[in-house]
Length: 570
Image (tube, rainbow, N blue to C red; front, side, top):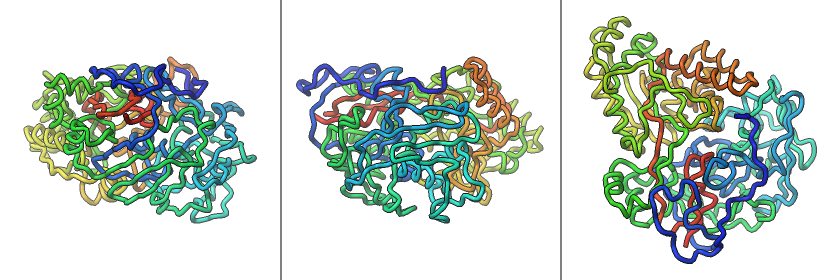
């Protein structure tokens, strides 16, 4: 695959029938390859719910896939994934920009030209300075611990740069600059081919400097998209209404069908599924699929199953095996965890093959270009191997086992079930787990992704997952296996700290031949598995339910969930 994205026009796949007349006939997987219940009807209220709190509504401080998807209602970025179903959803198209990026200097410099007529919700013109400032503010990981770090690592920041809050007059033009009102230029330390994918992330959503309130900006984000915040009660929910300064002539991507979007947060995950089934809400925001309790109702019922889609997604659910926590600092103790795990029980915790996914034997999921399947820890029936686990325990000086703590996100029932399955399997070889659940909204900033918390509390295992930021080896692996991404808090690489892995990442990133580069990412995958610092659980499938009364429902491969900006209501 060519790393610079293909694309072209930014139009959505509009339905031939522009009316909403007659609801579509429900069918299993009807939203995977075409738009289900197409309509261009405007009006109504889209009701959505989330089983946890948002990590942050600030575009510079968010890293959940649902947030990247949903946030496009109120922000715009330089590029975005092409809306609609099918393989084209994995390509990026211009959004704020007139076209895709223009590389120069061998791929070390990238230039984007903004469209004319762009405005914030208060009518102020959006300029290149607002985009450059947004990128610069996102550098500050003390203020914004959640957001991606790709631009931080790629851009040629001044050596004395302290961030826009510590030094409001800082010159960051060596990294990102506005050469005029419509031109944004990125200066990279090394050539990089995937820039069009990186700038679809919300760090390039413009932020007006005079309205920036730092850590409090999440309470009142200034909209650049078709909707703006009417209300926002952190921890409870928010309401979006139409932004009358948004010009649809500048935005062929967003049909902006609903008049209002009402969002509840911290809704119990099982209750959310029940509300979705009953039609009390239209949309389950996390987009990772129904919970085990609902699966028991939905799958045996033909009418309910006909409202679902079952995509294979570029996501791995897995357990980080943390080498900083004794005795897991000994690789043989980590291998004991690998051998003892009951993969079938772990898959069952995620809902089985249909709703959870295929048992994963390595890190890269099948949808990633160049993926190869291999298994360094094969066990009979995938149910674990007690003898090999005990041999590894003896080799690491813990023949009778050991005790450690495993974390999971308490608002995700499947992660709790996974932790319980691991507790039972590891107990058979003398490894005793203490299970601790934490809120998803602060899981990476305060708990499992916080280096000091992990160290002080002896966290040895941590359940979580990862979806590709774009569909190649770099877009999937770099953020979770490169030790150089690890900071004090807000980490997504919780356990891979291997110099050989880092060297292979550099080699793969610089390889211009597509086939050779894909092979190198497989080598990265193998080195991580040899290190026994990631225990794969399932290559994800999800069972998504189309809400009653939703129009324009389509699974988007780039977002790895329904394409939220297309949605309307009957």
